[in-house]
Image (cartoon, rainbow, N blue to C red; front, side):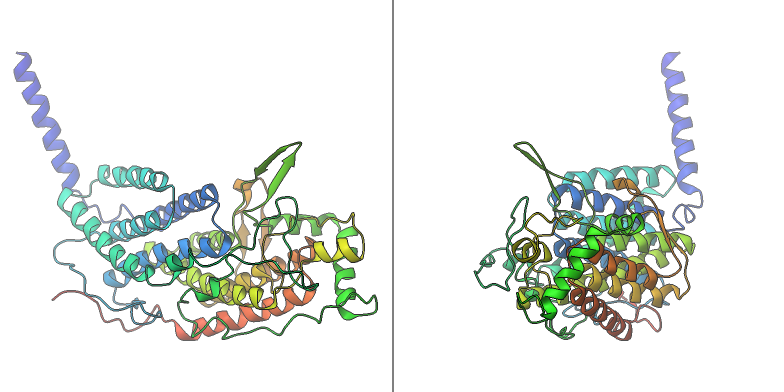
Length: 448
């Protein structure tokens, strides 16, 4: 009797599962929530593994590109980035049989993202939970497997592309050598860390022809003369920080985005959890995508397009940083104006000129303005997870302007670094907008 009941139960379960698999599964993934959740997990791991802002920009970019390449396979109204990005060769993919493309895009994102970080298990666990949820919602087993296989095939091509960008070779390049030249950057307290990524200008950009394509004007000529322009710029930083309003402090903290912030209590030194500038703007891109009610394809396009602009922005910015090698306000002010002065924000461990946030923010804002136009209201909750309040903006460019001036309020940049950095970011972003096409006639890269 027990055997008969067990058999009946098994048949009922099999029939129920078969019915579940045969249901219309196409509407399981319609928006970009799954990819945005994957990006948030990647952000958590970037913070956990303490990647620098330039390296973080690389980690965001390649997975986003992989997801978008699946979009280009799924919908001929989107244009593949293969053949558009430097060194990104065209390739045919096997799309025979029934494919659930939203799942394939997610598989591509997770596969590449996992290859970019140290704590692979954290991303892998997140992927498995997402895939289990999608599978339970009714994607047929064969379709599921075929879709994941396609996504991983696209991912393999993107990973091979990433391996040729000179990143791995640069891990063995010599470290930055601190000099005693009066104008030059010196490590700053409390950690006195060495200069981060001095050879980032040797990384292959996605769209720029070369790292110095939009080279900024040099910084003001260094001087300790109290009547010199350089001294006046240092005084501006000094006085600004001494007289900050609450609003200016809030702005500085909101855009701090320093993953190297170190706290010291007695003899104990520990890092504070913070997002990178690129991570903040990828968060804004995700917020904009949801606000615009984009589908999964539009979301993938937004994240890929924004990440490309940020990646190239850091290459261009770091090229200037280690060319000019300029001293930070904290070092100069302590030596020539007030040895007790402290900036509001902790000084990041790399040269001053130009401001990384100014370059990256303006490049990203130009990319997002192309996609969404202006005005575009932004309810920026990116920093809520890190203990900071929401800020609101009427456009991406308005947000970028605030991000740039925050570096003066924080006491970590002279004004020319902010002005020239913003100009560089805008020019770079506009150049990328002219060079990259994600919509239009698309030659589907499929096997016949």
